[in-house]
Each structure stands twice: as structure tokens, then as C-alpha cells.
Image (cartoon, rainbow, N blue to C red):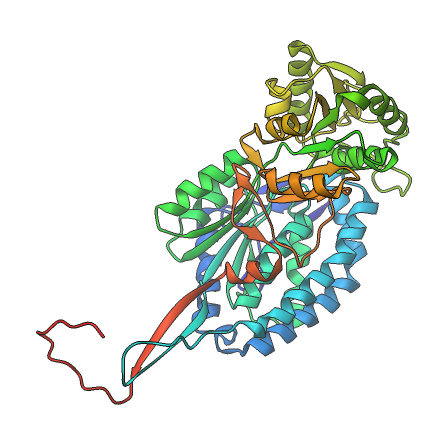
Length: 490
């Protein structure tokens, strides 16, 4: 039985209450590790350490170029541990080793990108209308950042928060999901090995009601970056607003994947399957609403079923496995409840629709026909391997159905028409529109949602900017200081 401690001020420590959280392997159903359970007292210690590192420690005095060099060193060390970290993630969340390995090998590239941006933060010298004065602007770190991550891709999502914050000169207190904390703790240990000053990156593990609430309300936290459900995001937003913290919220989705009759059918079928069954549907960008033009509906569904039936469920540690278990018992029960809701609403499972005998927390890849956009299965995020197919007549109806949702995270379009590609990209209310592809992503490209899918964006140069504040500096180099009792302009 392994035990993972929190990282506070560069030290591995247990929670002040002495309690632990058990971590269960979703495939073996066995408890394989314990994690320190943090408290409000632990949050206070971590935030104070982060604030001290920024204000009084070497991190705040370090040049941006030196910060970038440390980040590059961290990337090199992290790459050496990528396979080990991937295996920890699989034990923690049950996702495929093939996917986690790919993510962990990709993360060093993300780190190098943001390391390169560390010394590209520039101010401006605006022209002014006051004689004898000089003014310039500075971009400064917002301060201590609270980063809160979910259980589905712990280190990929942690990286997208930590690295732009560090590039901006901020310090971080990270709270991973209580279900999948182990890999984040091991990841954080590497900062010390890379030479980061103590307190720059801290990890406090525990439950949202204890650690998450304390972080989002702490007076010395300047910004909260959160990934999770829209329900959780709303709670974070409301708590942060009380002390005027800025936020980045990456929330849920009910993304439409739209197939037109002029698509390359083989490609669209692959895109539909990868859009929902990758990661067992446990991804915010899942294309869980498949909109198919009526003229090809039956043919497309038949081709889709042929491919989906070949999915191999099993041990996520095996390279041959294509669909793993649901990560947590509450999520497993939630997916099953939505299957019953869908059947009760009249949706017909043409594939799956039940639990799998492969293991206790497995749900069969499920495809539902007879779905319309008013059903709960089409309006609420399931976060599981459940695909609802909705037919449409023409482009106008496809846009209407696609945008008729409280979410707006991602969308897909499959067509050979260049005109339609641009028309749909302009009309769809989503932060990402993929045309003839799905789930493509890059650290260079902003990612965020419309409507209930979030506030702000991650990735790209704009991610670093979200961790900065702007300051104006005025210098009088020759103008007379005016009579203080006489108001004037210019």
C-alpha cells in the first residue's frame, strides 16, 4: 500500500488532521494507495508559502529568463518520469495506458512552450497628451493562483494551469481531485529536483468542501483556475466573486458532432467513434450529440455500428484495450442512471446500453437512436460512453439543434464543402469548431467555452496573459505641478 503526502513549501507532509483518503484502482477494484487528507489549516499553510515565495523568496526576484530556464529543466526531468507517471494515472483513474502515456510524453512540449513565453511578457509606452510627462505600462503576475483539477486527465489539465501561471511569475497551490491525487503529487515533487524555490508550487489534497472551499475564499489567493462540471464551476465563481478574484473556468459540454451527406463517410465514422468512446466518454469535449443528415442517416448508423462493435474493453494497462472502466463509483452510477432515463424517454439502444461483464465499473459503449434534442440525454452531460444520434434535414436545422443547449465547449462538422465549413464555423456557438476532425488540440491554440461551458480560456499566449495584471506608471520629468485647488484637463 503506497502513501502519498501533500507538497507544502517544498516539503512532503501529511494533513494536519492526520486523516487519509483511499484511492481505488477502477479496473482491479482494489485500494492501492492512500493520500493525505488536507484541511483548511493546510490550505492556509500552502497559500502563505506561495505568497511568501512570490513576495520575499527568490522566485519574485528572479528574472523572467531565469524562470523560463527552470521550467525547461523541469520539462527534461518530467520527460524522464513520463512512463512512471502515466502508470500511476492509469492505476488512479482507469484510463488507457496508451492514452495516458501519449499525454505524459506530450506534456514536456507544453512546458517548453510556456517556458519560451516567460520572457516575452512586455509592457507598452503609450503616447500621451500631457506635456512634460512620460508613461509606460507593466505586466505583473496576479499573485497566488489556486488551481483545481478533475479526475479524468490529472496531469494534462494541471500542466495547462501551472505552466502559464509560472511563466507569468505567479505561484501556485494546486488541489487535484480526491479520486486521482497520486500522479499530481509525484509530478509536483519534480519541481524541487529541477531547482524551483520552495513554495512556488504546492499541492494540497482533499475534498472540495474542505480544501476547495478554503482555496477559493482565501484572501491571499488572487485567481482561481478550475476545470470541472458547470455545477462546480458556478460554486467556484460565486465564492471567488466575494473577494473579487479573477477566474478561468473550463466546464462541461454537450458537444454536437455534425455529419452532412457530402462527408467522407469513413472519416466521419471514425470521428464519431473517437469523439465519444475515447476515454470511455469521460472528457468534457465528448461529441455526445451526433447530428446526422436524414438522407444518409440509416447508412451512416450502420457503418458506425460496424466500427463501434469492434471496441475492445479490458485492462487499461494493456496496449490492445480500447475502452476502459468508468473512473469512480459515483460516475459509474450516474452513467447507468442516464441510460435508464434515455430508455424511459423513448431512445433506443442499438448498441450497448448496459453494464459489461469485463469488470465491475465497465459500461458498454452505447449508441442510441430515436433521440431528439428535447430529451435529457441530449441536454445534460453524461460523461460516459453514451452517444445519442439526432437526425436533421438541412444546414439551418443542424445549426438550430446544435446551438440549442446551455453549453458551448466544442463542436464538429463533417463536410467536403468549403463554403459550408466556413458557414458552420461562424454559426456554431462553441469555443472550438473542428471541421473534418475531432479532438485535435495544441498548447498553442486557445481552448475555452461559450455559455455554461466556461469563462476565459487556456493554452496559447492568452493563457499567460490571464495570469497577468496591468500597471500604468507616470513620471513627471519637467511639467509644472499645478495648483491643487484648480482642476484642469491636459
